[in-house]
Image 1: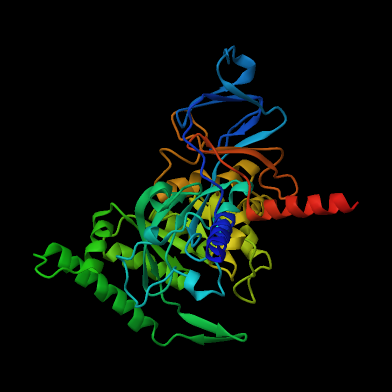
Image 2: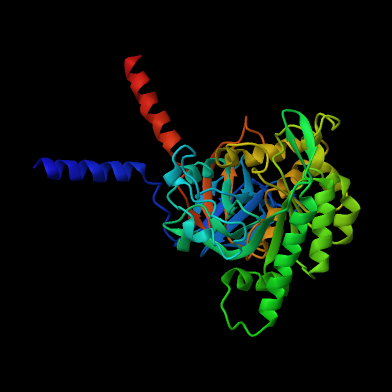
Length: 429
C-alpha cells in the first residue's frame, strides 16, 4: 500500500511539473474584430478584422469597409486592443538548459571544437518550464542554438507550444553556428592582445578547406562534421558567425567571401555599427546582442547598445534582436525581448520599425518569412492580442495567443503560484 501511495505521489509530482497541455488543432473559424492590427512590415490597420481558418490567416481587412457575416464563427471582440505577429527570438538556448546550477539539465554544448553535425533540435525540451513563460509576453517562436567550441553545431526553429521536439519543429537544421576568435580579451579592466588570433583564424580556414575538399571528393571515409558543412557551401544552409569586434567582423566577412559562402549572418555584432558599408555591400544581416547591456569599451557612448539597432536600421541593414551575447540569464531574459525592442524607440526608431526587429526581420533571417513574421492572408495564424502596447512592459497584457491557429494556454508556473497565493491571502483578509 505504501508503495502504491509513493507511486501515485510521484505521478502527481510529474504532472504538476509538466508544461501546459499543448492546444489542439484549430477546428472552428475565428474572427478577431475591432483591434488595431500591427502588421509587422511597418503598416497598421486601426480597426481590423482578422479571420483565422485551418491554422492560417484567411483574411485581414479594414472593419470600416467590411460587411462579413460572422455566422458560425467564433468571434473575439478586440475593440481597444492590439494584435501583433508572434515574436521570434533568434540565437536562443531555450529548452536546452533548465537549471543552470544543475548540470544534468544542461544540454547546450558538446565536447570538442568542431561540431557542425551536432543538432540542437533533438535536445530541445518542449516541456521546459522556462519556455512556457515566453508566451505571456508574446514570444511564440525561437531559433534553438547550440553553444561552445569553434563550430557549435546546427540550430533549428521551433514554436513554443508542443508535445515534443518533432511537434515543435518549424524549420529543421536552418543554420550552422561558428564562434569567431577574439582579437583581444579584457580582464579586470585590462585589455590584452590575443597573440594566437592569426593561428586561430588559419585553423578555421584550414578546416573549411578540408571540408570542401572532402565534399568534392569520393568520400571513401565518412566524415559527418565535413558532410554537415556541405549545405553551407551549396548555400542551402546559412552560416551564423558569432563575432563582436570590428576587426573580427571584417575578417569574418572576408573569410566567407574567400570560401564562396553566400548565406552569412553576423551574430552578437556589438561593433557592427563600425562596419556598415561592408555589411551593406555584401547584403549581410545582423542579429544584434542584447539591447540592455553595458558598452563594450570605456570610450563608447554610454547608450551605445541602446542605439546600435537604430544606427544599423537607418543605414539599410536588416537587424533582428537576440537576448544572448551579453551576460548571463539569457533564457530567463528572453521573455523581455519585446521590451528590448521598445527601448530602441527611445533612440530613434518608430514603434513599427522596432516591432520589425522581433517579427519580420528575424523571420527573414531565419528563412521563415513566407509563413511567419507578419499578419498577412495565407500566412500562419501565429499572433496574439494585447490590451496595450506589447513593446511596453507597463501595458503589455496578453489576452489571447495563437500558434498556427491553435489558441494556446497563457498559464505558467508563475501564474499558477500567483493564483494560489492570491487565494490564500484573500481568505485571510
